Length: 418
Image (cartoon, rainbow, N blue to C red; front, side, top):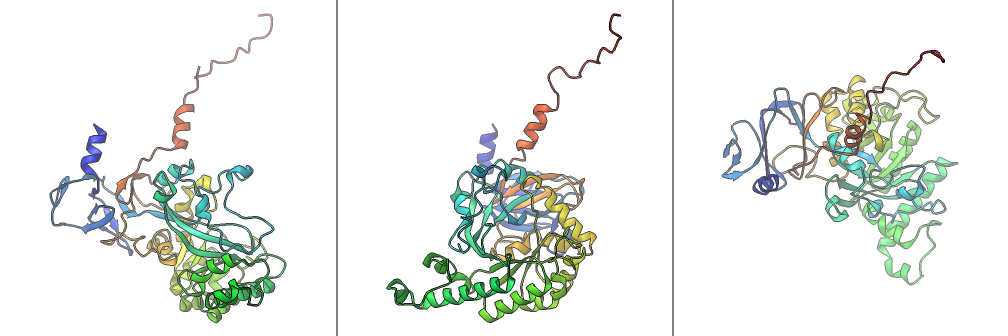
């Protein structure tokens, strides 16, 4: 019977009775998704009558009082599907060969496993998309945008290359910056002289950079996708901003523990920052001036802020981490945008991240404030299709909630011989 109903509802979803996030706050209204896109939002929607929209039968969810509707949340710095168990190498696919520091051509989504046990866990936490990020190396590779639905890579991977990632870690940040600058210049030279390079009539490139790496950096030097640089210290952020301006590339800062010190410069340059609001205090020599209102100061300056969670196994923490940004002074609307519109804007997914008409219908309904611990996920839809909230964590809970023979009989503590 359920299969027949699902077929009848295919392609149409209605959420009624809740309040919908409009980018600034929550307003009373209904939402209609048709064929994977937002078709209508608001009150008194023309053609909406109960379970039908413009004569089409719909999956209709009547939300309880106090329910809030947001775009699906996005983890902007994730390793889901490519990093399962850190101490089991067979489940770790997010990095390259340690001896190959420059691997811009590596596409981490080629290793993405849409059947990962983590995927349903994340969906149940209101997360509908993730930016899968490569690890290791001076230039780690290309990140990709995946939706947390679908049985195959072709279903799940929306964009296999949304950015190229670099890291200033190592013995010398000056050397790292020099290498990165030369690599970008080499990529630009390669794009203009491919024939000469292929015929071995060109100067040598940065050591370790292959022709495929330079090819992969082409969209970066053309300004089509951003270069993401992992950096925390204020002086290093300043140097990377100067590099991006000189080389005329789009830039995204990841880490950004001391980004507040350059908030105005980041805003002027239009550089988004991916950060964790729980990074404050001197966690390292690069984070000495990290502070809890980092996200708030960046928001006030007009910087696009993205929030991420470091742990695959603790997906619900993503929204609580965003809640910490609010505790530090960020607006609640800004914290929700940091989980929705911010990632979409930073990585060029213009049809994701909001509930405007025409956007991809990744939608989550919550029992209340999504940044509060006591709030539950009521419904998750990806591309307008309702998703199951069942997952391995819940299955294990059900299995072991009542153990065989429980309650355990009391121990016989009577003295021996009696």
